[in-house]
Image (cartoon, rainbow over the protein chains, first blue to last red):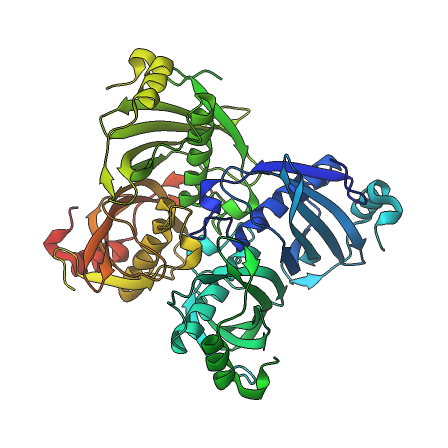
Length: 142
Length: 142
Length: 142
Length: 142
């Protein structure tokens, strides 16, 4: 289902290993769901597998939990780039439970593009920026 | 090492299963370290194993990453309650790498106390509040 | 691809959180892939969500590793029931990397059907046995 | 507690993230406990951090489950090398719940020593073999 300003989503199911003794998905196990959505988002823009020297590392990750997911729930993870800076990119996520489309969890993740050897921030490659902004349009801050 | 206003810390080591293909701790794998510190904090106050009907569930978790940890690094996780409301508690964490005491990661986690059957917020038990405030003193907002 | 005596398979992709600092999938992170294949196998037979009082718990899990998987590899996980006893079921798995179909990992898992309260083995329900044997035919030992 | 032929053990506690919706430790989450015991075993013999070109990769891992562990249980993980071959080492593990010392899980893990670039088996270094055999004596097969 479309959820503006989100233009992309990926689906997954809650595996048994994602649950905890409260009978719900462990709060830290949403991160792989966000990874999945981010990976598929990048794949769809041709940006997943690159060899440009740098790599993205996590700088900040804030997650809000509104309702729990349980084993075998089907989840739709909406993903978008909400901001693209000189050396960093911020993704926004919203996970809904299918088929009733209930909002479960939202998140923002800011990743910094670094030189792996020096571990210092470097410029996000131009083509990365262009393809993301071409897809997100005015919905992404720059 | 003391890190005011933190009055409590727990130590752990980075297991191999905590690392990822970037050679560092996967960003989502700090959550179990925070859990460890929270659990030991509560144990130290006699608040870990209780049977008062309610349980705490995660409402918000924001994490900031300053430097990476690697396999077998020894970590000291500082923990404190920074705020205790009517139905929720906010923990603050700071993970340092030993022995050089380098700051790696900070986090805030807000947990809501709920009635498990109704899944609605209920009052944090009085003795929980009192013991936490007795330990944290004026450093905890209420 | 068909791999007799396997009659069922499920596909997944290696998430970044499945990798470790050796740059490959952490050996313990194949278990969720086996879970996925077992869950989809049971779903396909109408046996996934049942409320018959008992539940299956892991009794033995042996895994052999032939070649490593890496981030974003697409895996096909073949699954079958190789034996169904009075109180237990043994699944066999074989994970291949796509598209070249290279064998990565094989496993056997024996699950015991137990009464959750007593934690003692009880009979596998008749309809479960019948549907599995109806699907596997003479390829499953009984 | 001593459990011949085991001569070494390490302790840990069940974290909340190790549990699943059955209320017990997820069967795949014993692997990090075995890693912990293996790492501390090697550390005690001065074999943990080495730079000899090769590294150990998992070849086989079989686990048997006798009783479940729950959140916050204290576990003692016994570890030993039961066999050391030309290019591989087999570890044996037994996890007990403290303080009643109940056997929960046993495992065997065979790791192959490989050249990382070629991904082919190479000889286990002589000093590794000697220190392990010096510690295990006749209890280790060779």
